[in-house]
Length: 328
Image 1 (cartoon, one colour):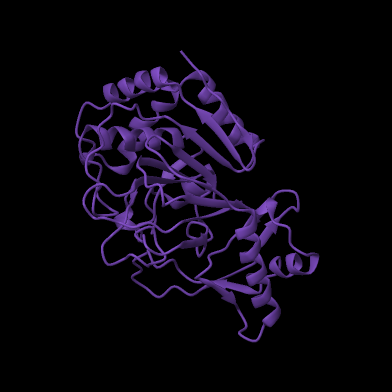
Image 2 (cartoon, rainbow, N blue to C red):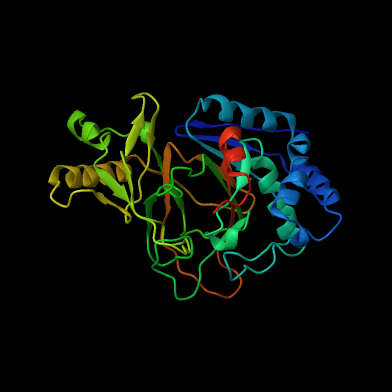
């Protein structure tokens, strides 16, 4: 049985999964797991996950492909109700790099990676959360105000994933195991920006530098990447931005600094937000969307907000050039 409702509320496509379909899907996911996934290599995990797309309800499968090919309703896709209400989520993990343990966490991780294989090759960097293919976005004690996914009390401001790398992911998927009403996910797409021609022109010039994301553990010094913030066509612009890691290349370039401030104000103006609930999978185009998170109060008692994330390389050519699923 299927009851999939899409709401054309730009820039988000929303697809709901009927509870009976979610139960059937979850049962099929469980049947795929016949050993402890903690022992799987990243490649073995993805190989198993490749069976998941065939298990999705046909209309959900079609809507995902429609978004992947044309994104007719915007550059963000929200799948709702993927996890049945009866699935008991274990206590929120305390480490971003914790491997999924137990039936619920392992089933959720396999479901997430399986859906994301429809967008390309799931991967991670060796420098980020121990190179885990599935990372945990959870609050960490002592990191409340950091500009990483381990923060909580502070606003996690606008950024793309790993903008300091030329090979940043093309898509990322966030699956909610446990939500928090205060910790809304927020996002803004580049094509909604209403910038003056002068500001847009400055942002399209290579007058900016983007420093490494502090979540990465780097063994060598990595210089900032010189970038244009906006690239691509005017109708389908791409964006590379991180509020706290980007500066003008030239400290005396006041026009570039002003353009960054105007861009940030515009992102705040066109933003959308969504309070993630159990079973929500939020997928976004990391070339065309910036995202962040509202502040929330962490309790550190096992009931905190818990999202799983997987990143995807949509280019088979680029992925093969890496030669490995967890590149340096």
